[in-house]
Length: 171
Ligand SMILES: [Ca+2]
Ligand SMILES: [Ca+2]
Image (cartoon, rainbow, N blue to C red; front, side, top):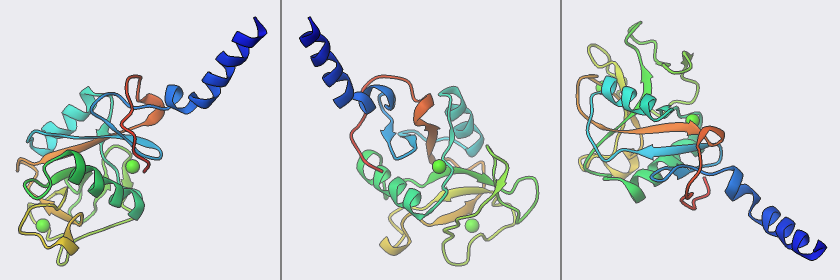
């Protein structure tokens, strides 16, 4: 009897993180978050609403490692070089004053493409992938008219990620 208990404990401990820290199907697991690269187009506002419906927000990029991870996800799971991807930030409230709208924090890490943000009516932050973008500019940022239709990336913490199969990626 103690032997069965031992095996159960062994199994539980060796698979511990898989059971506790996983992402829903269709989401990709990173270090701290689950990410959802969309396969559909939406305006920034609609993309934001779709992420909310999945208990998440549009992706907030905190550092270069996270930006690189998102580039990898899009290349592996989405249609890179065909679409650009909305992220969480905009400067709708105050021109030139970009904030991550879910946290209302000013951008700390930034990865703007050359001559961006160009401002004016372009208020929403997209990550660049389209084919006209040189490889060295892939994953850089642009401000774009919010009513434009892009693909998008949602993000939620792994703790809120729910159950089901994790896609095995270390981010
Ligand atoms: Ca993040
Ligand atoms: Ca721009």
